[in-house]
Length: 229
Image (cartoon, rainbow, N blue to C red; front, side, top):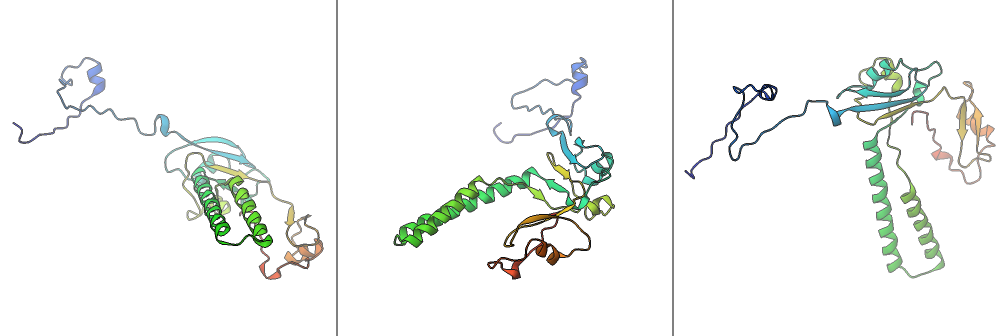
């Protein structure tokens, strides 16, 4: 009577209705809503990850919601004989998208800064050179493709450390290289090169094997990038 509206919820067995069980059937009325839910983890909810490289059984593995890398590695038989856990590369699509967005945002900001600078400064040879260098950096940023790498401790995961384990997402990829046998030296050295790894050699030994520093080297900012990123 235009005063209140009452809503009621009925749970029915659709299977029984389809089997002509009239006791389960309902006569639909105006404003009724029939909701048929999807079976959890069905159809589009299927998830998979890919293991590549020095894994005993590499390939694509279906995963359950909330499954961890340790359980999938167990199903894959662990690492192959020469698998190098310390250099594993773990890639995630969501991280790649966020990184790509940040790279694009950085390029846009730099492009805006260059435009403002070109309008506010008097054109000189030096400013033109700086502008050209800045534009080259913008172009390089726009061509950069994000990898989406997540640094993980695969050694800890395989050793059973729960704090190192990670929950997998659909589309994750794990690439496990073979045990490396080389050390690469790049930058301001006389001869950038790659050397055979020797356990007894230290950082400065590899620098010496590369001819030592150039005159433009900043010795206070040397860094070592380990295989795990």
